[in-house]
Image (cartoon, rainbow, N blue to C red; front, side, top):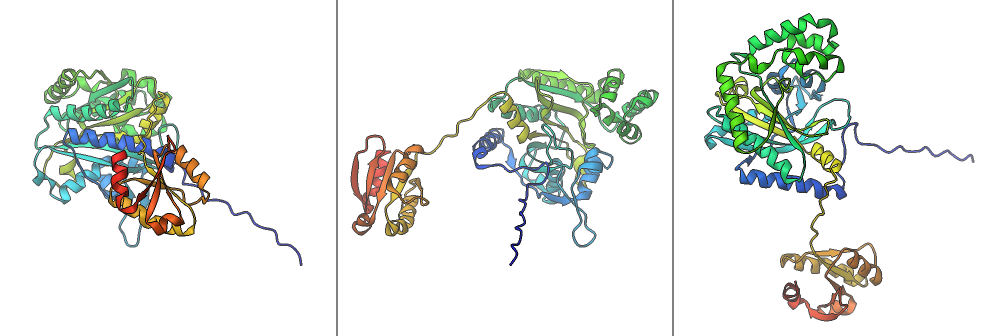
Length: 427
């Protein structure tokens, strides 16, 4: 009978631009999340979680139909029926939608919101750009557009990065005006770039008509030189916007947060007004955080006019910078008691013993995959357990364990009934 050739089964990989967070990486991720939670608690931000899936219309109406995010980068799903859904490409629109839907203005002003979760954008994976990325967002929704809130958002993001020991932080900031003065600025941009239309990249030829502010955001080398001669927003915005921006800068100076005026900074979302900013790290080619004011977004989505300002901080970008700067975090491991079993009966009874210790708030480790006493003790030593509980058939019948000091090797027999108290006294 002829031998059949075995076909090799290829393993399935994660989708392009999306990655697993492995167990050894979790302590660093948790450190970042905990630091963010601590910052939010101190500055009185309340957590809000929104769905990963939203109606695509939400982002078309808020982010802007002519933006790269909506035109090129959204992951669109079309379930049964006519509804079109999208994996969220950013958090602010969903937060604004939730604010309106659940009447969160009843919580009072200013409402400080904190959000953490995955965002999705279909773009070419490269350094600091992946298709699934995790963001920490800070948002302040109010009943006025007080510039102190702009400063508080920048401060929260800056303190988060600073608390993670990231060095050489740099705030870049600009104002892009309001709905009253921005149209005039857009016309001046269009007039300038029309003269140089032949030098524009293909995307910017389209932006010139549909979204002229995005001309300043183009990363193509062919368009970079043109920005130097482009009209400056701060020279073309109204007196109210100039006054607002001056007060934001005054607050940053009061906080002793240094900043750079970046006249080409516009951000890639249509809902921004007045203040826009990014936080970068010197000598690193990407921003680690960014945001701005969005005074009209909530009213555009059907809510009452509620000025707001927010910021997103990229966790993957934080980690990339931490690695580049050689910042290491050593996780604090609990000194758990290590349970060593001898024989099948003791192995079976170990489960209930561990549960009794859990009820007494005593942390326990075990190594059920290896039956040998010496192997289990070596494992206890490697993980730094201060004590080991040796549990064999004899101890099962006597309802006791042998408590071994892993440093001195001294052992004593302790009854179940007294075990929790004896361990707590030794700790």
